[in-house]
Image (cartoon, rainbow, N blue to C red; front, side, top):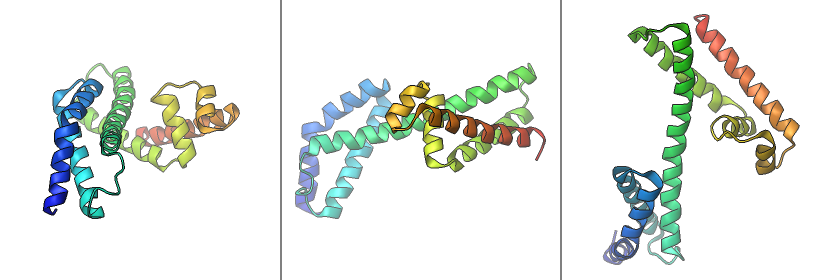
Length: 177
């Protein structure tokens, strides 16, 4: 990074850094996460400035920084939310089967979770999106259809097909396959 690029980033950090950090604190309710996300946003913006050789391609640096930060926040939150949701399902199932969680059962649950996550990632893109909106964001089918521009009956079909795939994964897993 040459001197002018470094000065640009330093200027942006002085102008927007504190407000961006405060915004991330409000969004995450965690100072460490907010700090990491803010730093990651500035790093990504600095890399873009280096790549583009100047700030002329970034018309509104504040808006760009916030967009990068919120994208990072979304990626982190979405992944965490997804994992927590699936772990909750598996842990509840494990408790139904046995009051005692053994190390072996915990490993098996973790492996089953990985198999389910892999199966969800392998779903057709639209079906995956519908399923995640339904199960993670708890949106009604009508709202999912409105958001994605598809009929409610199509939403229902996507959910049924996704559940059938996941049921098959769990059955295979429980059968020892």
